[in-house]
Length: 90
Length: 349
Image (cartoon, rainbow over all chains, first blue to last red; front, side, top):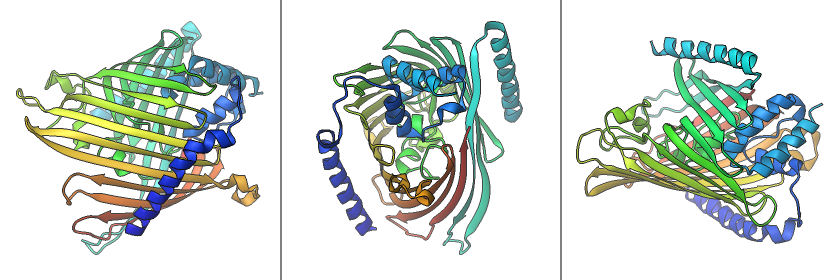
């Protein structure tokens, strides 16, 4: 178990350093949010992304509003992801 | 009697659903999740290992939207096929782009595991980490009111989100376990002291969130002097695209057992998950490997535990998961063999 603790600590330390440099190495400079990216970056943080075709327009409206409150999204982000889901649920 | 009451509540909610939908053309739906599992636990003290099937959760969730800015939600929890609880039932009013007012019984936004991650189809490991079981008593709901919202900052996808609440608060006997402090909703019949708390989260860029949580109140049921209960927590998560995540929480409880003496309970966990879809090998696409380490430290050795759990998840669909986990438990004192093997099927609907 001590070995597991050491390995876990090492992984955490490396991960922490990676997180610090991650934006400069990997992220592109986006000027505006897109619904698809909001969906992947936020909904995908907690659970696997559900297929947009699973729900109707009205159902997505209910779900996204609740997820805005639960997930701490901004109004702009929740409007963008709702538009994305409703456009892609045919 | 309790079961009959909750069945009646389900019927009322169903009637309410149909009535609202017909009368006001409100939008509504029923979602939720369910899971069953087989667990096998070593029992060294009795020299007998125990294996059992368990219909662990059936949790229907009712979501309503009466107007664009007026929502209601309720979740009924049926555990182990026999235990009924109302996990939450609240109404939220979205006042403007930055402020939402919620009233009712809601999941306490302390860290993220309690509010967002504990449902079985979302949590990547079948068991709960010590920090979010014996320290923060997941699933923890409170009756009260809450302000919440989010504000965009600087770059796209960056934001600050907040929760601030006033609730009845945890209550129970002096020095009681955290899970024993969360029974019943009308706790302030015995202790007329409300608790306040909140969480502040920051998303500095896409894929990362860091948060800090706090809670303070009085918890004991005697008339005077009332004893303090203070909680503090930190949470952090990192995601790379849709296939790697690293997350963890640290939680601490300072529980007064006399006006001058506090019992300190700490717990933490760290979890890494890797979905093998990035390999672009068909057979590996639905597979996810998860490892978790958690610990609790109650200041003495008798209740200081650690666990390490590797888990293999197989996604039949985005919300249909088979899991195989092996939980290695270790005690600081009186070490016994009580490791667990768990096979779980979880479905979000």
